[in-house]
Length: 257
Image 1 (cartoon, one colour):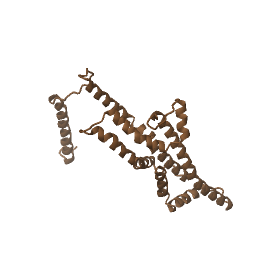
Image 2 (image 1 turned 90 degrees about the vertical axis):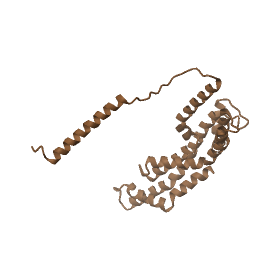
Image 3 (image 1 turned 60 degrees about the horizontal axis):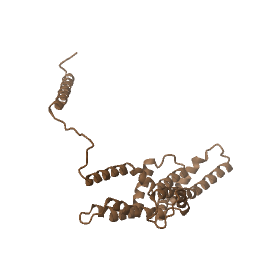
C-alpha cells in the first residue's frame, strides 16, 4: 500500500481535523458558563401582581385551546367538510391532498371571519392595549364575545339552539344573556347540517354522470370495463368546464354574507 498517495494524505488530514474539532467542542463547555433557568412559586407582593399572573395563565390556557376554538367557533368546519365532499364526489382519492384542502379552508375561514376579527380588534383588543383610556381584562373579554356571538347566531338554526337552552333550562331574553357555552355546540351542529345539505347537492350531478356512463357501457356490451375508468375523466371535464372551483367558493362565501 502506498502511504504517500494523495488520497491517503487527504483522508489522514480530514481525520485529524475532525479530532481537533471534537476536542474543541469538548473543551468549550468546561470554560463557558451557561446560564440556568429556574421556575418557582412565590408570594405575590400585591393583588395587582396576582391578577396579572392569573391573566397570563388564562392566556396560555386559551392559546392551548386555540385550534379547537378556531374549528368550533368559525366557518372552518363547514368549509373543510364541503371541500372534502367535492373530492369524494369527483372520485379522486387523494387529489387535492389533505394539506391543500385544510390550507384553503383555513384561508377562506380568515376571509369570512375578517369583519368579525376587525370588530374584536376595534372593540376589545385596541381599547385593552390603549395607554390613555384602557379597559379591564373582563370588559375586553366581554366585548370580544359580542362579535363572535353575532356571527354564530346568524348561522345557527333556532331549533338547535333551543335544544341546548332547554337542556340547561335557560331562557335568555337578549343576546347579552345568551351563554356562549350553549351557543357553540348549537353552532357546530348547524354548520354540520348545512355542510351535509350542500354535500348532497354536490353529489347529485356526479352521481348522474356515473349512471349515464354505466348505462352507456352496458348498452355497448362493455361490461368488463370498470365505469370509473370513463366516468372520472368525464366528471373532471364537466367540473373544469363549469369552472367548478370558482362557483363552489363563491357559493360558500355567499352563504356567510
